[in-house]
Each structure stands twice: as structure tokens, then as C-alpha cells.
Length: 163
Image (cartoon, rainbow, N blue to C red; front, top):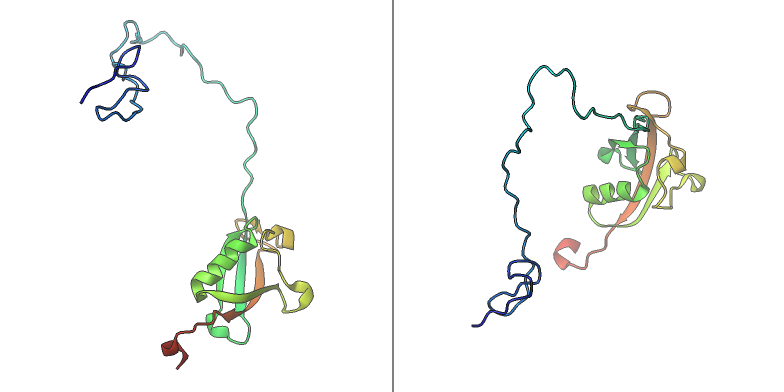
């Protein structure tokens, strides 16, 4: 096999592999030796480059947490609770229900009561957008909400499961 050399040296970017394929070689490492004069002699009293505080530091906002008590319609044996951030979108909660129950058809979720006006339909909305605000550290008013849900299990055409 013949090697083709690129102008400017053969080890940089665009070098050719012996088989004729282009390769992207890594740049050469710099040697990690100590520089002269980099060692500080003790007792000069100050740091040569003082650390600067950022001009603007955003305030730390605690996460608003909410405890959701899930209640399955007509069967209380599958009731459970989850503690989530109030900015959690509804599709994440539906994913959790699918992981608990398997594939679902016609999943319906309701806030506080099973009625048409309380149904949570838009999967892209967050809990806050549905009026579930939560509280810092999940403690206080509004930090616990009941979510009622109902679903139809996925239909399976397997004759063994239909027995």
C-alpha cells in the first residue's frame, strides 16, 4: 500500500490512513512541565489573581414540590402517591402510569374529582398550568392533591391471554 502525505505534515487533520481512508487525528499533547518562576515564595501576602464575584448571581429558588395521591377509579388497591416538582409536564406523569400498568388506551386524569371540567387533557401542560402550585420542599398548603385516573388496558389478540 502507498501512503499519501498531506501538505504541512502527515500527522494533523486530514491525514490519510494507510488504507486510503481519511482520518481525523487528535492534536498533539503539550508537554506538562513546570514553568520557571511559577512557584510562589511564601509570605507575599496576596494572591496575584483575586477571584472575582460574578456581577449577577441569580437567586436560588427552591423547587416547589407537590405530592400527588393517585386513585384509580373503582379500585383502591392500585392507589399510590408520587412527590414531584410542580413544573412537571403531564406527559411525564402519564409515562409513570404506563410503566406501572403497561400499555394503556384512553387514559383519563382528573384533578380532585372525576368530572368533565376537572379533566387534565393537554399532555404538554405542567402541573402549575393546571393550578397545582405545590410548596417549597413540599410542605404547606397546596402541596397535596388527589389525582383520579381511569384507563382501558391495551387490547391483546393473543388467544392464550384471552382465556
